[in-house]
Image (cartoon, rainbow, N blue to C red):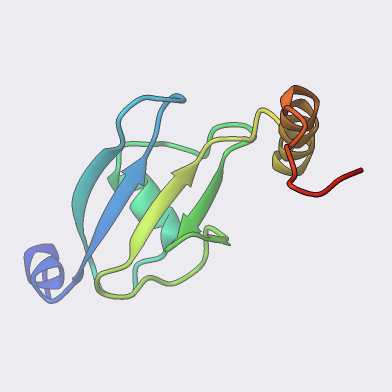
Length: 109
């Protein structure tokens, strides 16, 4: 079986990447041969290797380069986090609590 036949019987996946915060998502459909893994999708998307600190996920779940892909999978290239989400939420809650006005009640003190 030649490469064209292998691709015809292959699988279609979606590649998603957000290159920078606030930038629109880059999406592309990829046609891979049957039995392809995440590393094959990385190469097919034009990325030679995984950038330092970045991660890969399939449907939002972190994965390894050797994970086999299935028809219709969405492979996501994930940027490294700039801040811890839990710490950011704590700071935001503390700020909102400090800025809140006291509530008026109908009850006597």
